[in-house]
Image (cartoon, rainbow, N blue to C red; front, top):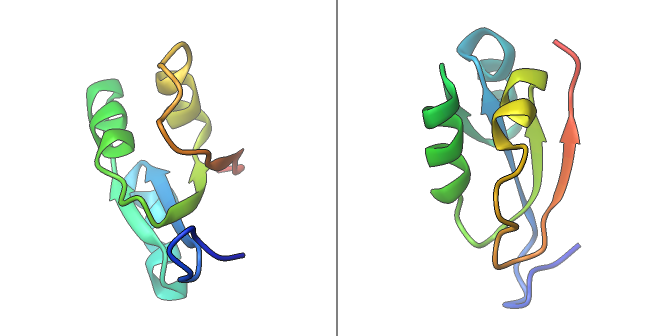
Length: 80
């Protein structure tokens, strides 16, 4: 996969520290978020190059009902 700019699509992970920290070893943008407000702030702060976002179940719940981002991103909920 490539971005519109031609670079590779990047991956981000949002959730509690214990659940997401290890993804940094694979080069993912890790956004530690301990509460709903932090999850929403992490979502809004993602670089435009991020095309895949992995969410913990709690992070996915925090984003329920949020407006869709201006770019299309594939999201998935990962088990914790």
